Amino acid sequence: MLDQVTSTPFTLLAVAAVYLVAIATMNTKVGSMIPVPNSERFASLDGLRGMLAIFVLCHHSLYWYGRVTAGTWTMPSMLFENLGKASVCLFFMVSSFLFYNKVLAIQTSPMDWPRFAISRVLRLFPLYLLAMALLMIEVGITSEWHINESPLSLLKSILSWLGFTILGTPDINQIKNTNLIIAGVTWSLVYEWIFYAALPIIALLSPRKVPFSALLLSAAISLLLYRVIHPDPFILIAFLGGIAAAVIVRWGRLNTLLRSNWTAPILIFLLYKSFTLHYKPWNPETLLILTVIFTAISAGNSIFGTLDKPVPRKLGEVSYGIYLFHGLILYGILQLSPIGQLAALQTSSIYLAAILGITTLTVALSCIGFRFIESPAMALVNPTTANLRNSWHQLRHNLTPRF
Image (cartoon, rainbow, N blue to C red; front, side):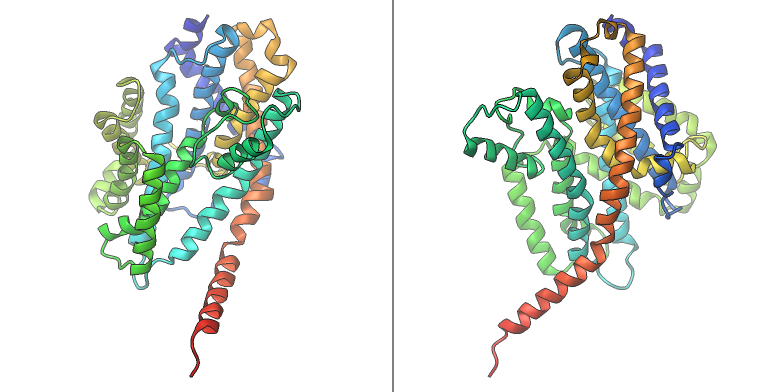
């Protein structure tokens, strides 16, 4: 049965079906709450983010198929393994490209580093807090609302999760493999924070000036995170792909070639090759191929118009929610609800139908989360920055000795 669902034709058709259902959901009333992103310059990146989030959902759906049919959490398909991990790699490139591009784009004044830090907190934490609330609810349901460990131990594990799992992903309330409830997606957020912390230092690669205070704080936080997390250097290299792309897209003639429709078939082939070259993408060959693909897309190649249309771009707007929520919904439906106990799920076609329904729920919840949590939080970036800056100036003024 697992061989049937992991055969290449079925895999590609299933992924296409899931993506089309996600697009269809964005065309419903709940999707209409999401505006098309304003920026047109990197429109293809908006569509890419949405597609990558759906790829990660498909990746974890196959893990769950193994759990439903065989009781194991294993990945029998190299293609599906990289569908998730290579997508995360490309997500890293999106982050490094966008922020290093901002560094390069600033001509007259240095980057507002306090605003950058505040924007990252308000962008990631509010929706993450909702995901953590849902995680705690599912842990409660799984443990039948019994407290299975000391209050102090329970508090420590919850706080670890609330801190973006920088200190680890401990089991909560002795629920074994708590991390699987959220499909283990928080590991990538830790790497995102490492990149954000190091960005002032990375900005030294550009001709822009970086305040010494920003460099000092960046070095201290980066060193602390490195000592606590011990990140994989090969995973960190993925961020260099986005930095390289931010430089390359400024080369006029090459930029024109990369966004040509003649390049699109080559990109599709390279993407498939990157998914089937190695079991994991954290190696020089795959990272190089993914960097080429990403550079072409960031240059404006829309892969025959599949990435830069309004609806795929709107899907990209809610990609963070899809990334956070899909594991929780997979667990809720396939583990906690009666649906997960149906023998019919052993049939790959019935299982795919269930995943299509889960995709609709995930996208809908992500739209709601964006409309009522993410968007209002991001609107607070400028006033919060101004208020904190005024408070800092006032504090310095009050502490200044008067003679």
